[in-house]
Amino acid sequence: MSKPVSRHLPQTQFPVVDDCLQVGGMPLTRLAARVGMTPFYAYDRRLLSERVQQLRAALPKEVRLHYSVKANPMPALVQHMAGLVDGCDVASGGELKVALDTPIRPADISFAGPAKTSAELEQAIAGGVLLTLESEREMEAVAAIGGRLGVRPQVLLRVNPDFEMKASGMKMGGGARQFGIDSERAPAVLRRIGALGLDFQGLQIFSGSQSLNASAIVEAESRTFELAFHLARHAPSAIRLLNIGGGFGIPYFPGEQPLDLMPISENLHQWMPLVNTTLPEAKVVIELGRYLVGEAGVYVTRVVDRKVSRGQVFLITDGGMNHQLAASGNLGQVIRKNYPVLVGNRVAIGEHEVVSVVGPLCTPLDVLAGKMEMPRADTGDFIVVLQSGAYGLTASPTGFLSHPLPGEVLV
Image 1 (cartoon, helix red, strand yellow):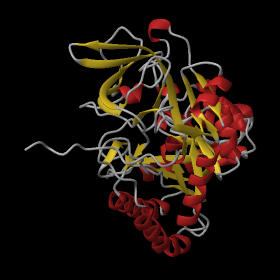
Image 2 (cartoon, one colour):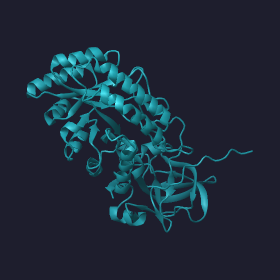
Image 3 (cartoon, one colour):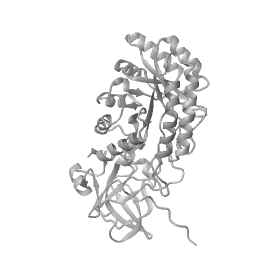
Image 4 (cartoon, one colour):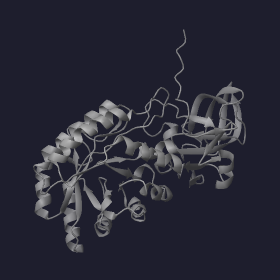
């Protein structure tokens, strides 16, 4: 007896009219003509705005929402997000420049990352942004640069907790990590921050990312609040900002279900009265990237050849893992699984077949869809990789084999 086929959830975020995907309110075929090239990425403003509205409705009104720019640093997209969120987090000098070009106040921009250069630290301090301290060496360097510039640096202490977020796609805390100060060392570091005269704002405690398990997120948030209450007793001044990270995931693979926000919402509503009493000056921040933008983006590539090799159909496209590394399975997957992929101008109607979609690169790793059922496609048709709004273009080896860069539009 054969095993049932595990399938992706039906695509619902982008409308389909006359069997053609609509992105940004226009047919994919027309959008491709507007962009003037394939491959390209497209991000839908409506979906970005709707996701933030959904979160606002679920979260306690006191909780602030920050956008993690590393998920997608496209300047136009960051400008759009700046009008929707309360702040943002950056992880490089390049992202810092993009963020400072938005209407977001510098004090609502935090700069994290374990290897900030002296030049980046100087940029951040001069710009008046909030520095997330990742090491004791960095703390001393920030104090020295602030003294030289005549500026009192604003800082958060990033804490590596003694717990991790269970069922998360990527562990960011617990155990030995390159990120932040181990929680048992944090009291001494907090005292040193006070001795150095830094403008202490609060804590960032981040334990995991890309989780579809609401109970795991609830447990991590609860333990984060407990740790923050403990560390507040050692802080040089009142905690004014508590960044509890995020970790909210989106479904990519067959069988995965969307994250249920309800248990997370209920847990945060239960915690907020105690947080407000114990840390009365603290603004609680949830920092999200992938969850805000991931489902609002598509990667579009065109079929340039169709061939059959020993009975297997291959659709060969003009873009691949050099632009969308994650969809190829080469950004952390142990066993390769297919992202949701469809024929954008033939979404459902017509003869279906099992095909492999491969890119133009001279490597067998360049696979966007492996033996996947979809409508029959031919030369000139558009292959669309969904869930491409986060960790797409900037997380891919665009220089590999020197193919042209893809286009990128916000519509």
